[in-house]
Length: 358
Image (cartoon, rainbow, N blue to C red; front, side):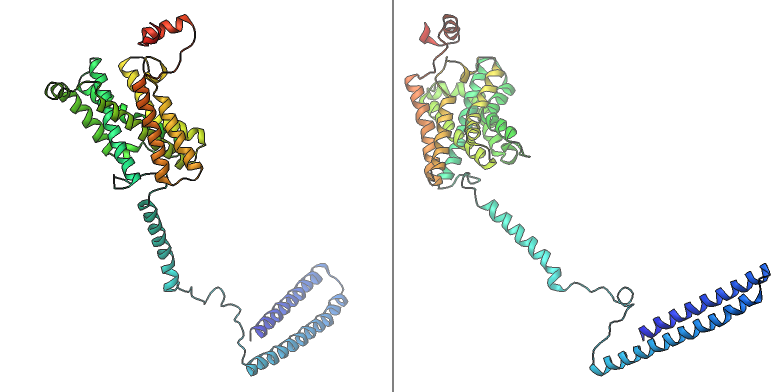
């Protein structure tokens, strides 16, 4: 039926065009006073064209009827030409199709939660726990408290008030990790913005030192250079250098940058502290024993142990032990780096406290 309709439509269009041609020819003949013979000659041509179109249309309709009867006899369904865009309603997605994005989202959230719950091999649990990585977190807390205490004592000796001592103590404890996170970039925020307990530990220790240290010295006989203070400082250096190296590894920086991340974490808070109290920066001068060298050694030992494939617990113990051992040795045996071999340099070092050149 569709083919028949199309053929009828073509036939009607062709007949209409022939009628228009006949009318136009008649007007032109009367207007120009053309001979009637030309108009008469056009009529047989028009009749012949009409008969030819009728014959073609009849043949086309006959073929369409034969094809239609054949398709009905075979049981085949003929497609409808105009239903493709007008009469076909859009199909609703099936229940399984609608549930697929939700299932994928649920699986994605579950995977993210699993990754968040599972610590990175080069990382620590959120809080201390009975494991080597958990012990590293505890050592990190101890080092944070020790650094805040020494920073507050140095600020107090320079004449700062309670706010200044709290600020300097907090910066000494968390300043190195803050500089590290800023340099690593990639949208990272300072670690203490996510782990606020470090701010509480550092600020609380600094204020407690400011208000209670003199009373503690009177009551318990504490001194500013007691062994337990140096031990806490050494443990902090060992823990900080390993944690800094871990952050560099997770950030994907080269090995030398990983080691520098360990050095920054352990020492850059002290650099800012020395600038604030206006004294020569400790790690750059020889008036004190080595400090940055111990952090670099601990970080390098950790990175090397990781490179040769040692388990995470072994490399954590190796890195922390190397940093702590070298720091204790430097404090015990007064190990310092050499200064430039000239008399003015030696005198300058002597003026800053390096007694080797007295």
